[in-house]
Image (tube, rainbow, N blue to C red):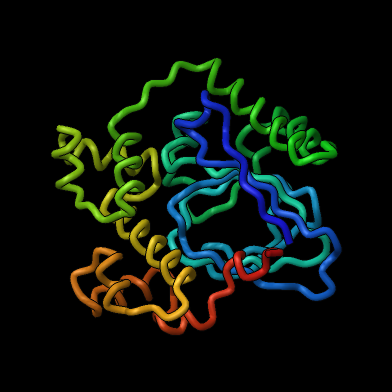
Length: 270
């Protein structure tokens, strides 16, 4: 199984974290289930292989649209893959969808919304271009050209929310809202209102989510985790606070997650 990331062009780097291609050369003989902890990013996905199933906000599996936009996901979610895997995606920075497409992000938090229901017929051509392109480069180029046109035809100026998100990601969620507002010299109430609109979550909640995503990446990389080190590296006050937050977002206790996690990295060709 192949999962490859691509960097955006310079003009899109304030908005796009990366592009990706996810493929499996041969059809899967049996369905597989992949899980992902919340990562704090949003995405646009184009499926050119067989459609797969994903867990929705009600913890039910349903078939995903052929192309869709997803907002912040606030808990571990599961994908059920079968047949031929083929998808191209954009991983957006947390406030980018709101900036580019003028979408209030709370409306798509914990949802996968079909692109045509948001953008209408204009997105059909892009979907066809991605599906018809015969190379990874061609698929990514089609998506990038679409986004570049959107960005270049509008006037953008980064605001306090964009800078705050960059700080939160850089510090892996280990920062308080008070520290953020002091660093940016802004009014807390006004900042929180704008943050919710552009990200879909409150800044405090988003920091907690990013911390847990960081902890999950630590656990996947460790052969024998020292739990005291994990608690410290995750910026938690104590182990009970860590376990409480971990169960809330990941829906398993940390030791069970470490033993049983089914993240994408376990299925990749290495």
